[in-house]
Figure 1 (cartoon, rainbow, N blue to C red):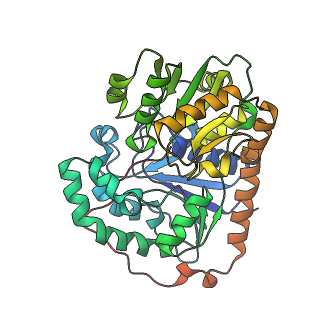
Figure 2 (cartoon, rainbow, N blue to C red):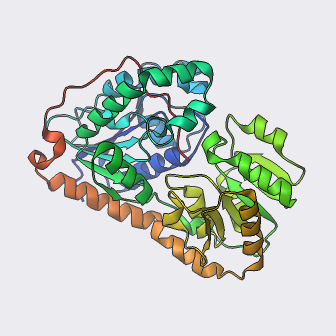
Figure 3 (cartoon, rainbow, N blue to C red):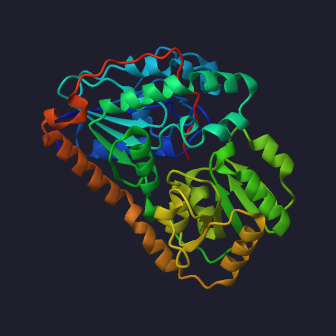
Length: 397
């Protein structure tokens, strides 16, 4: 573990500005708490933050923000700030830090550490809209965003690849993300799954309804879930909010209830009382999936992405290759028919517990502190590139 005099600068992409409080915000707060408990000297940085949704008061007080953070409009419509994110990220002064720990899904890995400092990047995902999800994003975007993305995609990919060389060590939230880091940036990454506070979740025998949760954004595929439960005519609760809510509510039948944002206690209660958790999204990890498993509940998910790191097919849930409604209707029925070992499901989630995450993160910080910077790919000088516009991206779960 690094000594208490060791200073770590935590750097995040915008927090809470796109669809409220999600996995990225939860992870950033958890890491702040873990490192604070070690007596380390910490600073925290982000270009923009929606203070209203953040839950850790100490972190919020310590956060150093960018020059545009006082513009309330940008917190409601963060997409207008994305063209400036390369500049905003590089303007975050972390020259005081011995170690920089960035949390990347848009631009955070582009932060400029001091000479001799180590840079660890916890990568939620490389920018989806620049790589494997480029064409779906084009189809879903409005005309202006589509034109901008088509014009800027090539230089943005070059910038994105270049700034990957500023990182000494990549940590990925799943095997899926690690493979994408290697494919698009040519870098190896160590998998460190996000932390789940397993002790807060417990099994309840009530089994009253099906459950899904997350930010209501297109790639989460809540429209698919609504179509599924409209056909099944089974009770479904949806936790979360986001720009798609009005559209999704218009689609939903009378067996589907939108709960919006709920407090932590209510969230844990709903997890414990559900029949099962349904999640068709191609997710980088999927913290809600792991939390459902920590509650002892079977999960119905796509056999791809981060869900494959969490769910064991046939033992803790079902992973489906067939993405038709017919196959998923049968998946729901199979979960309702099968006798599940709920204690075994909950036990399987213990590998994601915060205690496990904390031990591994501290180990990575110690290792990087002890490595000679001359051995790192990031030791080679790189001329920063400043594109005319940045990534028009989306947040994470």
